[in-house]
Image (cartoon, rainbow, N blue to C red):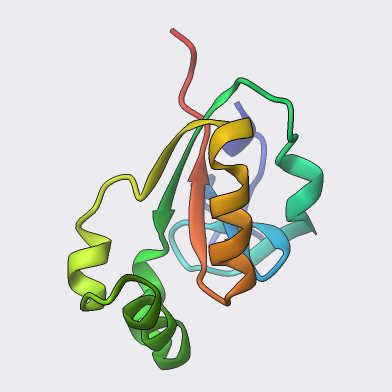
Length: 118
């Protein structure tokens, strides 16, 4: 598993989470929040994939006023209520890809997770 192979250079933990932000996909340390690796969000969201993906709001969003304001504008709800939706999007990548890209492109950071198929 990826999170057991990467080690945060700052805090030395192996807890890695994937975050979609803007049009980038960033692997960051789940403990301290420092970025470890980044790539293109479009590159990882294959448009024809049936693999299940879950997208949640980044729990650190409340520390970012601009992103929080975007959430309230997009959903018409306070950030805390949108954060309570767990997950925000879930389904085959091909069906939720466009929603994830639109929200990320609007400046809202999302934590992405691919549940195991078992």
